Amino acid sequence: MPLSAMEYTKNSIGNFIIIFLLFAGVIYICTWSPLKSNPLLPYQKPRRFCSNSPLRTIKLPIDELELALERAAMPNKTLILAVVNSAYVQQSVKADTTMLDLFLESFWLGEETRQLLDNLLIVAVDQTAYDRCMFKRLNCYRLVTEGVDFAAEKVYMSKDFIKMMWRRTLLLLDVLKRGYSFIFTDTDVMWLRNPFVRLNKNETEDLQISVDEFNGDPRSEKNLINTGFYFIRSNNKTIELFSTWYEMKDDKNSTGKKEQDVLLDLMRDGYFQQLQLQVRFLDTKYFAGFCQDSRDIWSVTTVHSNCCRHIGAKVSDLKVVLRDWKRYKTFKSKYPGLGPNKNMTKKYRWSAHVACRNSWKTEYNSSSELD
Image 1 (tube, rainbow, N blue to C red):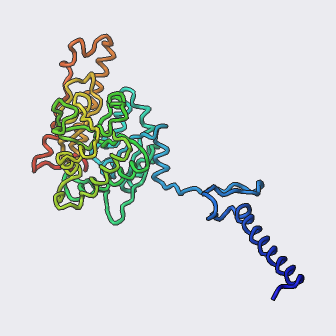
Image 2 (spheres, rainbow, N blue to C red):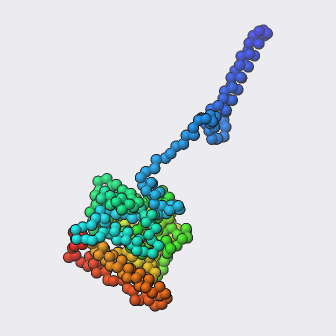
């Protein structure tokens, strides 16, 4: 039947109301609902219409490590890291100094090294070491490892020594992931000159690492690396290196090996090349150690008491190193016109490392300097 005029009018009004409500809904979605994503429009940032409302920001939590890194880092997020336990900071009855004291003394005696203490972060693996660090007003961080006591001396290659070295590696991986580049240094490394002067400033260098014996080629992977001193830049390649390195600690081929030996295995197996790492091996003329003394006291930058087994022996021979260094500085100040080009280098040789040489003997008593 044909619709009457009144029924037609009612239907028209009803359709108009439906269309109006749909149109109003679309307008509301597009304009007045900024907090929800709009499936009808391309992605856009939420809009705020209450100009008087305070701006709300979300701050990610900053942990103690990040705070410590920020305090010590240079503007380019570079710092110096060292790890200590109580055996390195406590002075025994018969001893007249500690490893940490000698380490800090080298910064005082070194050339252009004093200001670097501001960029040094001491990582303490036990409470005594942390308290000692804070007492000296240094930049300090307490590394807590549940269920492990790292306080006592960890004799070279003992099980506890190996555990502590791997825990150190995990910490350094964390630092790299946070975007910080750093020099890692053992505290038995004497800083006689500013190492940043000798390190290559080219940012393509991923890792610059010390060696026990330098074969003359700074790119040769036949050099025997030493993880007691190195400079590493934070990037994807170095993070991948440290991640793989740490994962190797549980590999059956790593049983009984310290972390340095595992890194050496990775290098010899071609992993450095696989990552396309740019690695520079540091000349012992500048970055020396007890394994291979520097041939040039006029150029030496650091001296590491490597090839030594006990803390007591290291302390004894490092005291001699600093004595030799003070003798050199006295001579240099007395005759300022003389230098390495004046054939004076041969007149200054390091004293013999007697205590460290004896530390490898089975009858050596490590407590002789510590008790």
